[in-house]
Length: 471
Ligand code: LLP
Image 1 (tube, rainbow, N blue to C red):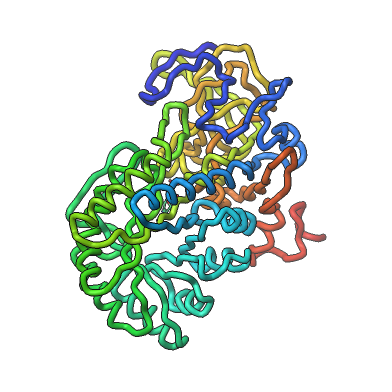
Image 2 (tube, protein in one colour):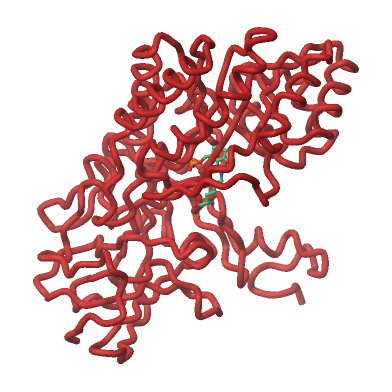
């Protein structure tokens, strides 16, 4: 099955070796053993598939912990270089489970949650409440009360109405709640570019023009303590320019508030990009962190206020590169396209375990995990098993042209926003999550079974099994 490229993404290159593992894309230390099998965290991927089945989410624990530590150290060094300190929150929306919370707490990070469910996981995992930041544009009164009584460190206020609700809940609980005010800076960023607008047309936060008024309103409540402003400009951002622009805009409001009373912190959110393909080349986090810290420091000088303590909320950049998803190849289908062929490689998962390709047109990289092949590269599209033509896991990739049924396929950089966005479309059970480290593997989130799916269906006989109703 020879293939000729046609209608391909501009970044895609025919690889010299379609077995090669691009170092930026795969977890640290991922390699092929002497049989050519992919090894992650010291564990053979073929053994993982045999033991836990496919699809399977695999998380390299040492990689995730090391990235958390490196990112924290990068921001600490950057903050120190401008004479301040920093708190780094792990954004749990990227992937949250009991184990992950513990890894992050042990790495010295705090935890950012954005729903009652995420808060429940963080608390149940033993995260100190004071190290939790609670986000969300539509927190219910029950969620607010729960957060306040649990003693969460900060609540990020997203609207005027919420400001009053949190003030009331804190007053009722006899507490003073530390809060941040989420502001729209008008800067939107993704990957290499950012767009700066005067006004926002989106659901999060309050407009920059109202930041001082609402900050003052927060200060008027004895039950609230204003820590500072918060802004999150987007996700999968490759450099510091958008953050710097946003910080500059926020600092005018920050300074106006700081002239009345100290504003101890400034939180610039998350969004640091990772490599999904060999063509992605994010600026190292140390450099981004320095760029942001310098922008904040120069903005503070310009506004005549002290440099506040900083805070950040990375999610993807910590957990994304640590994850790999394993699938078993089923059907192969060559389809003629302009100028050649595209080989559809169908796998036993799809948009239920990774909806990002269908939802955002995200790019991913894949490799045969169970062997290396001498066959020349062929253009493939890795498709799932769902009843929808947009059910694609990897839109465009080159794999050895003999890729076929029974091969184990690995998709890289699936640690963030895959498990957390997973779903049961077409009644496909969600796969387990396995952590690998030092040659050992353990389940950190159990996979669903068909029985799990049937059990919630009130229209089914509870004593029925997946094999059918009792006679
Ligand atoms: N802080 C706030 C307030 C956020 O809204 C987010 C992400 C983060 C931090 C973490 O951003 P990160 O460092 O992970 O980029 N589902 C999309 C991404 C949605 C991001 C939502 N907010 C995706 O899969 O690309």
